[in-house]
Image (cartoon, rainbow, N blue to C red):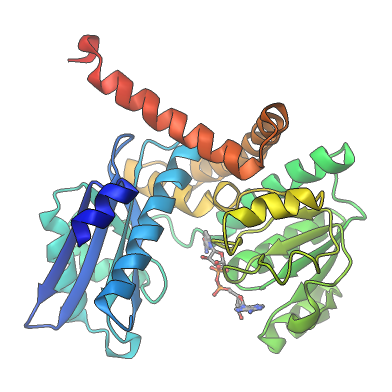
Length: 351
Ligand code: NAD
């Protein structure tokens, strides 16, 4: 069964690990290593079935291939899931997992994701070198992610209004956690009229007190008139129900999987709403952990994340020239990088 799914989705390797002693059940999916070793976080969730965990890891690992390739990183796409209750996570479990990562010989490098953090990466680092996001590394990537999203957002603003200046523009930020709050602060610093929305009322109230931001109820966020809607909370927020509700010119945010389905990129385009792919804008996190892997500094990672602005500009121009969505233009760019590397690797001169 796994093999059928692999050939359909182009995965190179999917490994199911079980350790009876600790109760570990994990799946590592390596989607593509043409550009380099696969890098992606380990998500720990109480998946209701093995199949549900497998579906998630297959989807997530494929997305990492595109994110790394579009960010001009020499990395492939991979991801791992541990099927466990987060409240039952133990050091022994994470150590057993680290030993299993080690057996993959560096084709997969792990990092933090939902329900795994720096402390877990430290435990894994006791068993393998193929881990980033440890306490000895470059620290929380979120501020760099926020900066990359901000630069990408400015490129969208330029394509829409003729100048990248956000001064006076109204921006609604959905989700003011690590990425969203950083983005809101940058927007405020550059003169935008920021409104914030979050299911955590204390989080929005604190920002309203500190910066004077308007707050928007989570249920009213899609209909809130604004120039830019910046989703920075959860996935699937642009869907059949919300596309007709949106009262903005641009959707540009840091959340993963903003679109419920790929077709919603075209649905936004049909409404003349510019949508910049989330995986292009939020690549700052991956850029930071990749820098940790290659031994680069945090300053270099920040500089690379700033380049997300120019990359977004180029993709918007390409989408216009080829009359496709910016998502399609980004996917094409990523695939071209992978195909060029594959051709280079198999050319007689490279042997
Ligand atoms: P976080 O947990 O710090 O913040 C998420 C915020 O969203 C929280 O304040 C939460 O209360 C809020 N939220 C949750 N559901 C909501 C809803 N339905 N409506 C409004 N608000 C809601 O997470 P984060 O690290 O800021 O990540 C945010 C998003 O960005 C995620 O999709 C994540 O995958 C993505 N991302 C993060 C990074 C990074 O470096 N942290 C990198 C790439 C992508």
